[in-house]
Amino acid sequence: MSVYNLERLNFLIVDDNKHMRALVKSILHALGVKSCLEASDGADAFKELRHFPADIIICDWNMSPLDGLDFVRLVRTGKDSPNPFVPIIMLTGHTEMNRVLEARDSGVHEFLAKPISAKKLYSRVRSIIERPREFVRAGMYFGPDRRRAASSNYKGSERRKQDSEGGGDGELSQAEVEALLST
Amino acid sequence: MADEEKPKIITPPNTLKSKVKTGGPGAVDEAALERAEAVIEGLTGSYLEWVQDDLKKLQAAFDQFVADNNAENLDKIFQISHDIKGQGGSFGYKLMTAVGNELCRFIEKTETVTPQTAEAIRLHVETLKIIIGRDLKGDGGKEGEALLVGLQQVSDKLLEG
Image (spheres, rainbow over the protein chains, first blue to last red):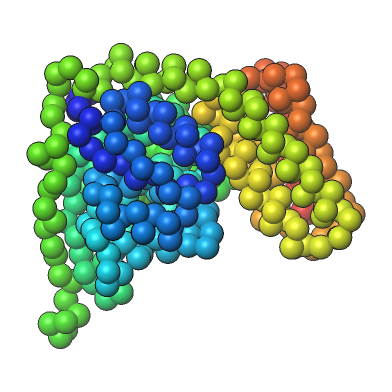
């Protein structure tokens, strides 16, 4: 496993649930991150971005008035966006296939299924570090290239393990999400 | 294809490269990950406090739903159970995630609200309370499996009918 020092990175955590923000922040601090800023919805986060130089954004989906997808689109295509290229991890309990593809098409880099763990969160951060993505402007879309190379870290046993942790009935495990996004 | 319609590829500046060092003190190795998992485990007491709040909110939303017999209140129940689903597993309460998920799926598939809809939701809410009340961690063993299978059977029967 590649070991990275994250202490110089600035993270923006966007979630309307203060407990989830506290959980994500605690994990990041335990991983050595020094700089975390919290925002409770998309509009608040966009405001914070004007003065906070976020290196990575971890963003929930369900928020109001501006939800996660609206926020991602605003960051990517808003005329006054301070950083259209910033890597974004979408953090959500919505793991049905159509939802995952919807998040991808809004311009997120990575998708992290709840419930989260330190290992799952770090694996998404590591993926952003190891696989810098080119951006594409095509029609209405502006965001990271949606055609990702298949993960070299993909392991069958890992998938089976995570399948047993995920929900059933149309829900995808984190490994299945990765496989879907790599096609 | 006109020029403006061709996909344009842009290589963004790689700002992370200069900020992230590999290895050395403070780098995230297996031990650091284990420590971070232990930090989450240490938050279990806090989780048990805030999940009680969620359960109270869930009960209040359910009571409102029954009183008003209004499908719009289902959305509030969905949002709270979605939060419960998203958090339980992080603290070892996988059954909270599984039952929260069952409740979300049931609400999503409900097209018409009937008296049985309220009964099914009530069973899910009671089950969530039982899991926390009896501190059923992990998958809850045989008791947990029985709870989950029972709920799935009730949901399936109601959705078929």
